[in-house]
Length: 258
Image (cartoon, rainbow, N blue to C red):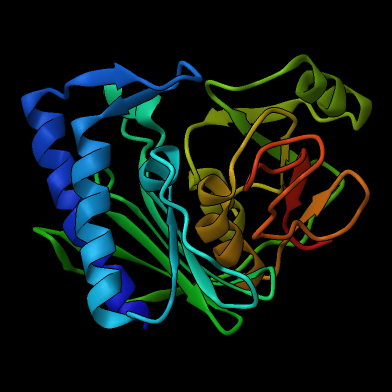
């Protein structure tokens, strides 16, 4: 399965880079978030690949869901797809944008692929093993390296959202005495935790499940965790929420080994 997801993410990344080089056409959704022709083209590639390889596994994809196309996932494994995570990074010509494909079973992210095409970095995980490789000319160009979270020491290094930071995040960092932090876009924050390059990622602003599933799968396979403010693992497939829309996440904290 992972090889298929990896190839699909790389193919979607190629389409994204072609538009990145030419200059994207940007429109805006009802929530004022940007969407580009790269989002749509990459999603079409991934949906076609998943339908061909896994016709019985439903897919929740960001742009399709925005258009009202949400298949029944009750009691089933399903994919969560964000074809271009970090659209603001992409539009702003910052390299921190990713392609995300995650597999959910019983509410848990059990496999995931995150590809950062402008950086040539591919992350992949399943069955408790997370790995990383470099991509050149749309092919894996380096041996896979097993990655893992580092143990948190007394001095924590945090990652924050570049575009969606909040006063609550600033307060959390101050409360925990964290002064060393870096703003990073997209799901790369999960991957940097999984690599052992940082310790904690508090997120006190809105995310959707397709934003987090693939990166969260990689983090968990690398020995980390993502917890809600109640201290329980973040779950996926959230429908009919009384105080929020389908597939919206609550605030959470992702971290490496404790």
